[in-house]
Image 1 (cartoon, one colour):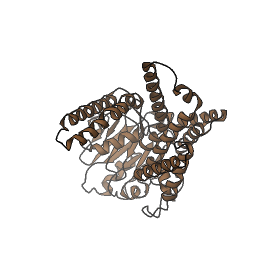
Image 2 (image 1 turned 90 degrees about the vertical axis):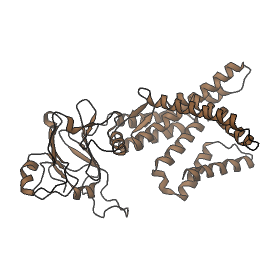
Image 3 (image 1 turned 120 degrees about the vertical axis):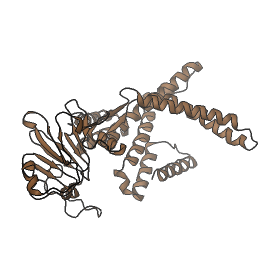
Image 4 (image 1 turned 90 degrees about the horizontal axis):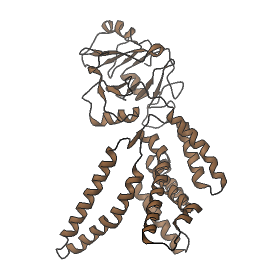
Length: 392
């Protein structure tokens, strides 16, 4: 899909040049988006399409604005001032792109970079004026066996680029991590952003209202108290200090990264079994989650041995939530929710919010008609499982 978008964009630009028209305009972006959507309408829901067209739209809208055109207009001035004006324009462009992409990145990936604009001030000139010319010269002089010096320059420039990327990524606060973005908040943020970018009159300022409301919805979104993967094997529990702990401390990097993104945290995940308030044996772990009226008792399986239902009944009845990656006997019923292989096949992964009115947000939605979904989904509210009964 990215290759198709690039091909369509290049083709439209060439056609515009041949017709003697201005090539890089919002009409070009609209035409390219329309062609892609006619060919692949499902691309609209994907992050690749959204990020690509949002970035291009932001760049063109900024450079079509009168203040930006006046700032970058050619004038009689020294080389130093002209260079400074160009660097400032590049920085402003990167900042606008970062702001435009932030809601999309937070919605799909639960994180967004904060220092990319500053890094690009160095990375883009380094790539444009050093790396690419050096590579071209290296390939040219390789035909006569003299390309080694240019390859050395390319290597050093690439090492500097990688060092810059690591330095920016490791800087404090380099990445903003957020929990799940509400769909209505994301829709408002995108609508407000497009309104600001597409209008050229004073009406464009009105787009700041839905954009601010959408971003505020993200900022006030609570973090989940429990996260359960679709197979039920991995559980992440929130800790009082804002961090999370995993039930199985030997989980791989992919599981840890996925859990951290869903929770909206950028800190290493601890091990539940190492915490003082968690009681574990070979088969189960039991702990309390939350405080006061929101306090819930969690019982989670961690072993593979078969346990008779009569032996589990009392322990399950004393827990508010029972979670297992295998089938539980019918005698095992939690006070609020029972999650096992049967229920996970219907709900998918879960994010549990254990307030005074607890709710569970599911990965799979009721009424989803896609052929790879189960024909029978959760009934009731798409966003939450009602309290007062087990999800079996």
